[in-house]
Amino acid sequence: MTPVKVTVIIPTHNTGEDVMVGLTALRKQSMPREDFEVLYVDDGSTDDTVAFLERELADEDNMHVVPMTNSGWPGRPRNTGVARARGEYVHFVDDDDWLSPRALERLHARAEETDADIVIGRMAGHGRGAPRAPFARPLERGSVRENPVLLGSMTVHKLFRRQFLLDHELRFDEGRVRLEDHLFTLRAYLLAKQVSTVPDYTTYHWVRHRNGKHNISYSPIEPTPYIGSVRRIIALLHAPDTHVSDDELRHRFTANWYGSKALKRLTGKGFLGQDEERRAAWRQEVIELAADLPAAVDRHLPERLRVLSRLCRSGDHEGIHAYARFESEVRHLPKVEETAWQDEVLHVRTRTSLVRTDPETGESTPLLFRRTVRETPSGKKRVRWIWQPPAPLDELPGIDPALDFTQPLKKAKAQGLVHHKAGGTQLVVTTGTSTLRPTPHEADPDLWEMHWTTQCTIDPAGVDEISGPLDPGAWHVCLRLNVGGWLSSPRLSGVKLSVPRADKPAVAERHRSAPRPRPHPLHGVAKAAVPVLRRVLPAAAYLALRDGYRRLIAIDRRPAPVSAALEELQRAQQTQTQAQALSVSSTRRT
Image (tube, rainbow, N blue to C red; front, top):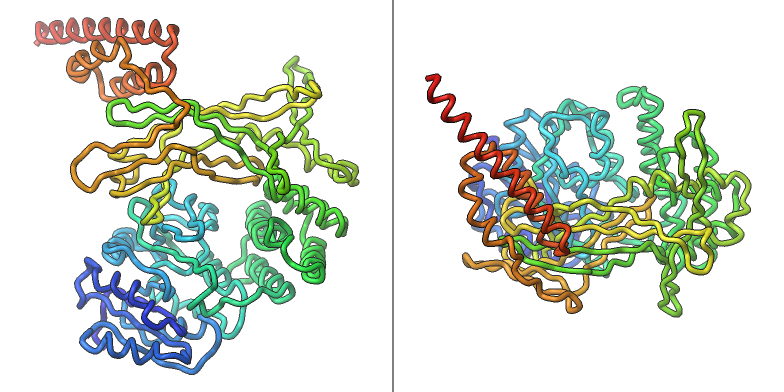
């Protein structure tokens, strides 16, 4: 066999002509055709998928169809693909997803550059969320033990060194096994010498069809085998070849699946929408799992799930259901206070509140916290924020530690996001200081509501240090807030960024209640000073001054910032004079 750089493995099942979305994307890859191959491994389709693919690929030297008998799951087709692959690397793709034009080129280059066993490309979700945390910072050569953030990306839609898979006999479970991708990926993570990411380019487009069409593994999830898979995943952390020796790290890894794959099955509308028999089955499975896990695992859960874990460990079926009904409607409710364009950068100032929305009336009421103050032996005052849950949760034995939300409230930051409507890419934008502003509750001053104010800065030329210019098209602007695991990212009403295809300035719909800002009196002075400041100031000092000036006048246009801006400019003039003096002095010495 003539080797190639990459083999793309795509399990198919009754996909039909819809396979053309992914196939068209593969035909547009920037990597030369002779450097990669595509294997469509068909899992016993009962329609004309195989015949259609054979006709489409008749003239494609690097694309082939591999028919096989039905297994009912993607594991066996993927194993078959790896066994037949000629590529130094393999990339798994689902039949309803697609790759961006430079995906294979960028992933392969990253693997060669870093000598990685696994390379993870940035993903975009279509009809579903896609992981963001693993791509917040570039990862050149790392491991999951040093970078647990990688656990945020557990699908197999990655580039793997084929010899690495063969050396460690990494294979997928064959047959109907839930979370088979997690079982495969976690073992691969724990065995890999190097893992790297491509954080600055969206390589993979992940699609969710509402009716599960084309998805081999789409079928109702049964509680017992599903929680059985969670137990198998946790067991990998104790296996001889993948053992995680550090207790705290092992507890942290365990909490990832106990929380996201077990406890979360008891939350939300998906749980509440099932009949009572299935809800009871889910509760019992998770209660039994909780009993088998060390209590120390709970320290690594988000606070909202610590409450639920406490209910599970006490075997409280009624409390679990009551908690699910309450917290399914917890979210944050943002309001846009002002928008402004400044130097082709969009500034958005917001205020958001942590609330629960009544599903029947639509009325939102704030979540309430009790403030306690304790003085330490050194005289410092320690403030604690204790969540006030609805009865009877507040009376559950041992619940008090789980109700302490001091740390999650302290850590919670409102964060701006932009979401490409067509492409699915979601990026974090530059966010100014996110300030928690507790406010006494009007009906009971001893209880407090939680609000946050923040400013987002959106530069279409590049929203962060990693990504390049925003792709053309419509971008929704969202505000993300995570408070102890209560996470939501609602769109900001009335704010939508439009990036043109041609070399034209971007535009944004403004919030209707926000007045159009008038040019600031200092704008002309600052604009004239820019060339001088760039010459005389070090780059870091100039950027700090520029950002400070923008913060002062782009959003807050009251008299105080004007005075502050004048002081900044006066200091800049003094710096300029000093720099010129130093320059003259240096010249004379020379």
